Image (cartoon, rainbow, N blue to C red; front, side, top):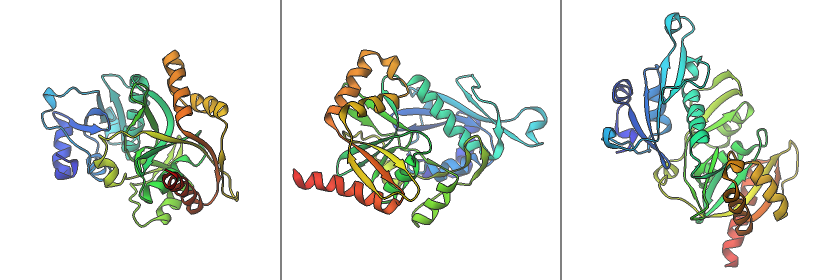
Length: 309
């Protein structure tokens, strides 16, 4: 069953009692909570995601909760509190930031526990059967570029995690709402009439944040991994001419391993996995300021490779 087959009131009831068992890529997450407005945002942002009715017999990866603040905080400057398996790793957020807190909390759960994967801090998208990793540091324009590619028909695997299985050479799909920050919110809102954004969370630790809903096609294909073919290191520079050029494999290895959440923890397995990935993929550096030109150049890269086969 898909989440959008339930009314928000039913979602809220499940969250208050047995929990909403939501399939998020390769993970099964049981969400509890009673924060006002959160069921409606889950309905909006995860509508095509699969839910599990028989949650009691399902093997759940993460039990998470978003509850109200305690004492007077239930009514005076109300808060939202994130919990994961009976722990509370973050300080309370304002109640209006509950959805952002849930998303960041789920990021924390995955980064702390999903070590069956080599995890890259990277957007991942697929086109013509080929996956492209966009590993980057904050401020590089990664999420904005990822959003533009998705809105141009690329399948979103993830904006945050490249979940790489060294044994299969595949990247798991983890399509979730894309967090856009500050100026990127209006850039993407104006970029496409297909962009569906949630409310803006003002003055978070990352500035103003709004989440972009994944395309229905991305959510419906969340059980389908993809084989990586490209590693592109993007960098936004205001006023720069669009530039895409090959990136040396040795430098690509260093940058890609440096953009991993758990490379050191993986030991030799991680070293071999990054080496194989760099060997098997085309590695590039992208400098851009104009989204349309950047998207067109990356699409041309994939199409030129398809024509050459």
